[in-house]
View 1 (cartoon, rainbow, N blue to C red):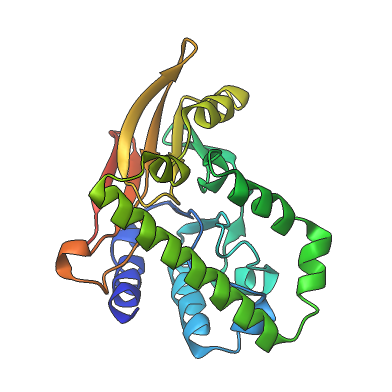
View 2 (view 1 turned 135 degrees about the horizontal axis):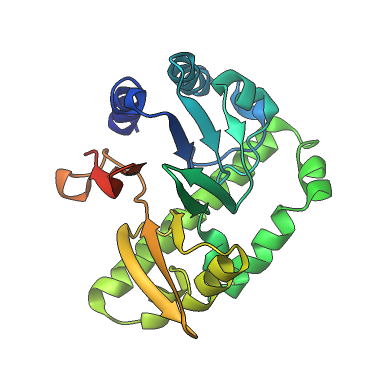
Length: 245
């Protein structure tokens, strides 16, 4: 994805330099099957160096793993010079308590994925997986990535035809899950990604209200009409979504 990579580099060398801290909310890479499997790649080294250069200018970097790159390890973290934070996390930004989540754990209508997620986050299973040959792991990661892409395209096609609203619910967060997370962490401002449905939502359930902001994915290598990339900026004046296409 050369155009997307080029925009990410430009972001790290321009807009990001104005920030005190940058939070990367997961799925930085299409898939990650172990540091040893990817850090032999000049491309992944290049991305790590771009991030390290940004941090060398005094910008603090934080990373929250996504469903595609939850196996990013300490070696890449050292290269990028970022701090890994758990999903979810509460951070104080510009005097505001902000609840950050990748977003996949909130898609509770997709029970099949939630079952898969509960297994692949097991530490002993990840350690066993990392013992497999690198070539096997690459094939497995590519297979999951391709399946995910196919499912996403099918879902979008069905939505355009308005044929299956159940498919729509599976691909999005649920009100109950957002209510539970914001209530548990006593925070009324939630930011997440994952769903590819950027926007701002004011929501409530059972007398409890919160505000939910959704990040877009980044993809500038499709047609101009489909290009998308944004960030959410929080400072003393408030919170805003910024289009970066």
